Length: 352
Ligand SMILES: [Zn+2]
Ligand SMILES: [Zn+2]
Figure: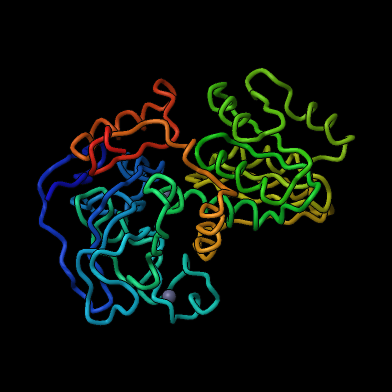
């Protein structure tokens, strides 16, 4: 089969590889019908995730059709349409018993496109298949489901839920990339009174507006701290969600929150940020970090099925599977191309 392979820093190759097979009795092999690319895949390609070995097939987000199951798989059969979650879970370890699947210590966690071959291929082996996939209800399209592989549960669990967004809250979201935009969508589920989104790209701020942000600020032009002080009567916001992953934005998130408020870090960081404890020790802040667990995925599927949530506007570009290299290029040059999320599908574009 063909797959998008990380052959070392700066070396992505769409090339022929061996087909995946069942190795453990709890595995399934899933034919990838639609996949999407994550900012984390780009980090891997730049060599920022050194544990990823050259030769690894990239990708941890996909929707597909089961083609084979091991003898220990109980809930899936060949032909089932499934969401392949970015997190694999053994289901029985200390962490999984607490539904902290992202922290699985029984051989799961973030495996796909990281520790084992991923979803940017014609087929993928999914370990612990019962716990690591979700059946797709009939009537829901691949594209409606695709954002549930990673960014919707991530923004919801690590952002909105950890940040304890509550009715009437004023919420500041720092960063209007795909995760920040998904945070806008999922924060609205809790009826905050005001969502303000901060970024440096006007096109992304416009997307935030369309998805329901009440106001947007461009931190290159606007005096963010002063405007938010005015918006909140000088208090600061109830919740800040950090969705970028650089020291400056984390520090801004701390700066903007009111005493007693929550700062939920969603961003993937590669460097230390400073925490001005001398200023904030007395302010009753709750600061959270996290990797997604995907325990919310069944509920998010229900919200899509009941038309309470529609993540498809996040998909800006569509490619056929033999155009994987173009898809990576378009996604990597998001500032020029305006890409938010891309969908790479087996079916011809015209048929979708
Ligand atoms: Zn991801
Ligand atoms: Zn586990």
